[in-house]
Length: 342
Image 1 (cartoon, rainbow, N blue to C red):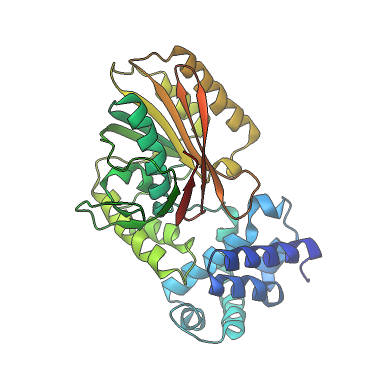
Image 2 (cartoon, one colour):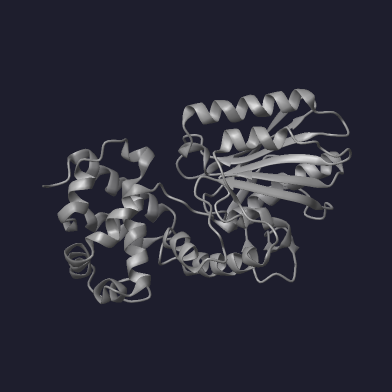
């Protein structure tokens, strides 16, 4: 069974996207896969019931193959994966011939990334709120995965315009352009919490490997940074809770908020994966909490999410009381740059 045209087009579209974001190997992989697929994996992808642009089955099988390469049980795949240069077509034939049971479960789960370099962008949004309120922060993240971005105040940054040096082994380069936030703004995070439908325990080796498999294998800087951030998160006192975002958030917002503390909801590149009912529930919970916000108990909402422009994400924040929403600029999906609007 050959892949239907729409499914093949999905793989080719993702290949163009990978090329745009600097992953030549992943682009080559996605272009090779439609012809290389075989067996139950091919059958499953050929009859995929959902919208490929939303479900991203190409990303799921690519992550499964990356996990297989790191696992080592398929020497041909391991040899073909970066930094190796083995023949890709032969490696894919071996993978689909001998490792269907390993690969099939990867099609059951949506992509789960925790790109810690986005902290360089999220940091800027949080600094804007910190500068406006002058208050310490309670940071809440939905779709938090392993909670790597919850630790954004502990990382070292090269922001192009400025640098922030910490003792942490995680170093993030984000080229800030335009009228950027003030990196010297005092930032104190007094409490933090996160939720995810499938949270990653950064201290669990198998879970770590699953998360790393979603990173494109030729982007070695991203892989090394993720390993360092997972080490830092494993040593942190917080863990991400297993929960549905809208219900969990409503519960967090209902908790007493100390006077003189800014409560901030944060999320990045996860909104597209939420059902419409969950989005509506989150919006309603934030609107209700915003209506209760006061000058000494303010509420903020920072987000880095897609808005239909393929090469970058929109940056925005809202602050209550008042509910003022600011369009703050745009950023690269992997956090490599941010164009601030001021």
